[in-house]
Length: 357
Image 1 (tube, rainbow, N blue to C red):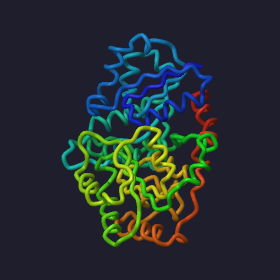
Image 2: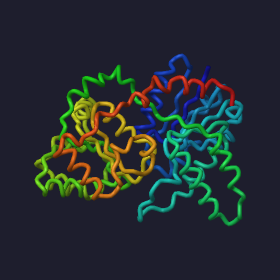
Image 3: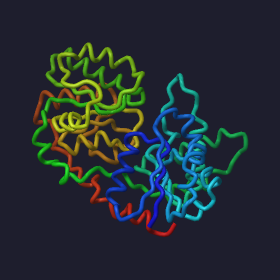
Image 4: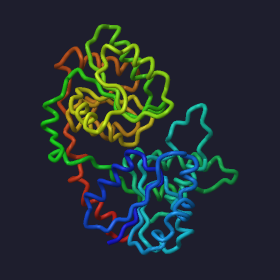
């Protein structure tokens, strides 16, 4: 079986998904085309043209299935290469533009939203990494279409899309192959890890405000701030590096071996995000023994029992972290992550590709 895998904005999580998928289903003949994750507005609208000019021969071949991320303008690509329309067309949503929180200095991403919508409508099969992702896409698309000049009857086709959409998460590696139990035994209970992108939508302000308060109260903890850093990061990171210096054991992106070691030593991994559709960074830390502490919103209620969630406020985060750091008996057990790992999802991915549309 020949599958064309298209990733138009190859962010870290997208690359992880593509590489692990090809490795897990290695009996399939894969062809991967990807574009670097930069110049977002140009990339999401221009990816068919980039591939037309650079990969014409590859796109002109026969494939049994085309598996594209939601950043791919699949509708335009099939128009440029009609033979791709005869393959089974699958769109995988790592995220959707309808639920992305826009900052005050951003222009509304109308083009990006339209690409998401056209690609979903052009596909034979639409897959989301979480039910929250699916529902926020459908509900967001409905609200978006109400703003169009015409009074479009969008409710029925969008609800039909919701009904036929599938939910398949991005699986994490098999814990038995990553030394999960060994990692769990290496955790430092009072070491807090932040391993998210250094951007406003991950809400670092709430995270650091709570740590400032804990530090001022004399609560003992260690801090490793990891994750992907960009040329411009929210100003709170500079303030935090200065004010929390005595707690810091690592600051900034790390080489892969060092990152894994720090992840394996994490006692607690925290999210304060306003934008998350699955949260691989939290999952990978939890697999290695860190206690995940996530807000009670977005995708998290479907993934984490109440013992690992706080109410989403700074006060709620402070109360839970303070208890976990000062009263060991208040800490829940390490989370069982086997339901997130590849063995639980390999066959579902295989059936996605090989079954008829």
